[in-house]
Image 1 (cartoon, helix red, strand yellow):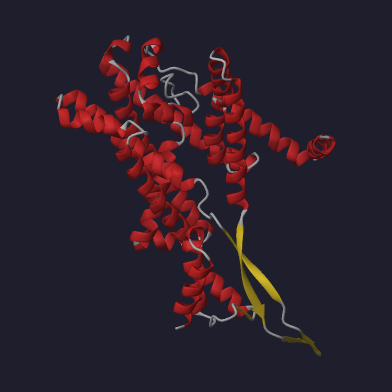
Image 2 (cartoon, one colour):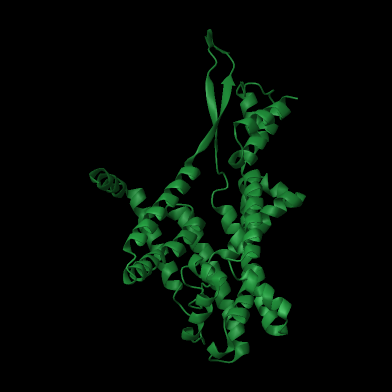
Amino acid sequence: MNKFITTLRNIWSIEELRKRILQTILIILIFRIGSHVVLPGVDVAKLKDLTESNGLLGLLNTLVGGAFKNASIMALGIMPYISASIAIQLLTLALPYFSKLQKEGESGRRKLNQITRWLTIAVAAAQALTYVRATIPTDAIMISQGLFYISSVLLIVSGTVMCMWLGERMTEKGVGNGISMMIMIGIVSRFPGAIIGEAEARGGSGQILFFVLEIVALFMVVLFAVAITQATRRIPVQYAKQIVGNKVVTGQRQYLPLKLNIAGVMPIIFGQALMFIPGLVLTYLADSTKSDTFQSWAIIMNSPTSWQYCIIYAILIIGFTFFYTAISINPNQIADDMKRGGGFIPGVKPGQPTSDFVGLIGIFNPFGDRSHWGRVQGEVRR
């Protein structure tokens, strides 16, 4: 404990880190205050039953820190930006123009970021209209419906842009990883209330031991998640002997570290962002058409515990895991850098075979075993 306190004091003594921490805290306060600013003309008391009785909306409400239930101007949080980022990353694989921008370095990334921002506004507008039409009952609207829909869409889009800007400021001026931090803040903000509510429920029914076991299980899950996130697979790289001046430098063996879970939590976020859309659309269609088919599918897509929802969600997560890993690793560049430095992977020829080997290992890294890598290496050698 003393070492932990000493570390905090050392961090606080560095002026640059102190400024970044203070700016991050300020951004968090702004985000949390905005999450409680309610849309004009809404009776919030009539929205509570909606999110509490709907599993999907309750989950989304957790991701945005309660702003969804409060009908806040930041009800959508950072989700439209994530949806836009998914679309842009898919376009970099499908359209030559976007692929060219991705390869242009810093200038290309700035253009892609600008396109992503504009697409975020369009996605936020579409999701905002769906949100106010499908999730806010008419008896909760206290002003003219036309005026309410127009003003609400504009305010929610503005709130999403504000969240996006806060995330970028946190990345540049704060502790970094602004978008991920915004999602984490929304989840963590509801964590104390969830723990207190669970403790009261278990304590009232005499199940204190069960509550303690839940806390231990939660700790083990977090520990396992951190271990998987930090785990790496080391690919051996052998460097040939080199002549430096009049000396012969003996070749050394180093390792190319590839994270076991390169995609991290992003596939889960991407999948959830897409699962958000059909549930709201089907709910709107069910209320508009009174169709039993739409009604049944709306119940399925709004229930995270239904087997249909779980299967679709699992497919999206697995698909985005492969996709995000593929765009995160550039095996051709790794192979070229290795070749220029005089390095090679034992048993694999330099050049394109090395690129294929690194690409296969990177993509299938979370799912393979040693026998699998033996088969992969055999294929690359041939």
